[in-house]
Amino acid sequence: MTGKLLAILLLLSAIVAGVGMYYLQVYGYYYEVEPQPGQDVALMTDANGVPEPIAYTGFQAIDADSSPIRYRACFETELMPDQMAGYVPVENPEPLTAPGWFECYDAVSLADALESGQARAFMGVKNIHFGVDRIVAITEDGKGYVWHALNNCGEKAYDGTVVGEECPPRPEN
Image (cartoon, rainbow, N blue to C red; front, side, top):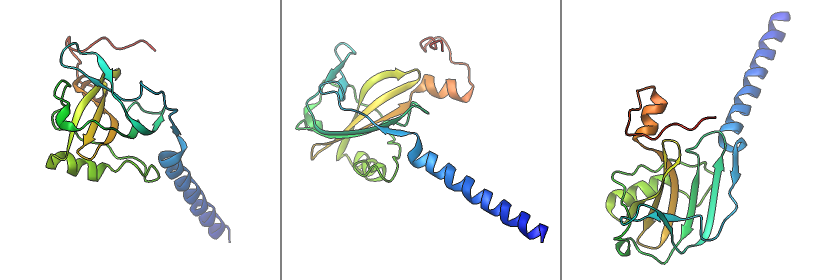
């Protein structure tokens, strides 16, 4: 009798822990980002290396304080990728996935659009957090997507490799 009770208790504990971890990963840490018109979507220019805001509508975004690469956003713009010659392109962009409940952002279809040339990716903000860049992708039909990705300094810093002199100093906590 005690063995069965102990087994049931362990099984219930495992189920509760599993459901709790799932909830925290998919829902718990995320929050909606309040739109800040004129500041949410910016692209880095070739000329001066400073992010320049672009016109957009329908902005939606989520973020989490638990990781600097959990930011995802969607928007619409009248700018088309072929009109963006003055902005810094991103080579081989890899959009990160978003939780399933954030329906406007589909990383798989975005990756396919980037690969087929139906979308182009540009540098939004360099080092928005230490070692993390904001990437902005725009499709031919005017849909835009934003995500954060590790840059070379971030990849080195987070895998334990010596960062080197080409990276900015790490901020103090």
